[in-house]
Image 1 (cartoon, rainbow, N blue to C red):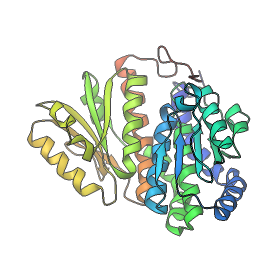
Image 2: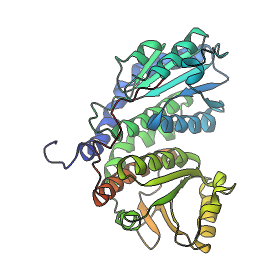
Image 3: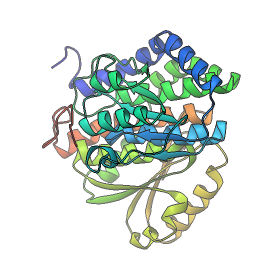
Image 4: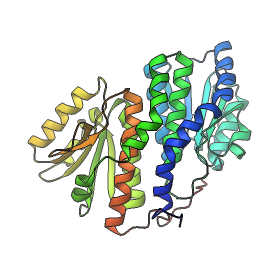
Length: 344
């Protein structure tokens, strides 16, 4: 066990701000090369390919590229390449593979097939010497450093930061760039937020819903995965809008709902949904800027919507670490899981 920390997961959470700060220099050259290629032949479509936490990071990329660039983004089904051997028509389009280890065969085969079809293939990976990196045209390092806990935390935060850096550079958006400069300090501050109220509510529950929208949808998906993975607690994530189209029927008196509030235009509708759920007797916890109060988890003051979302998952991770301890699970080695997951 690392000296001074109870778990590797806690150590890595506390390393995330420094990793994000170091990343700025690590990605400068690769992003310059990538943007030069994109400038010569701008894509009309981006396709992402990822699994697990990296798939949630890829959905963050979808939000960023569609929101700030107007480029439609679709998620690839890796089995189309790895099992069905079908080449997609991706000439001159962007193919983004996201992975921590870069070792899963289905992602490697999908990237190789996309490259053979004429796509510009990009690997956003923590392991830059991995087979996935070798299969792609350009490698953008996550630069999170070693991660020993099976549950990805530091690498997920750093992946989101790298995607935000890419977006800032691609759009020459000074507001995003400035928010990235502030992000390491804000990530450190997010670790100190008091989410004990969530631990108290979830310690004995059997199931819950996690809601987000816009920049926090990817965060909600990641939070639900971590609740399953390290807390052994069944959780499902939805867009607040999608939740009204059927899943809302699950909610009755006392049913727990964790709502991760965005700080942009998506907030108004989520606030209305939270009120409706509360009127129906649900136990709603809202993570939003401001001090803790009944039904409200504190979040940092709004700065930039996408950077705010990254700070939310950092605060959530610390709560999940404490919740896992209360529920008696081993956060660094969840049952049936390995650090590198290989699928085909």
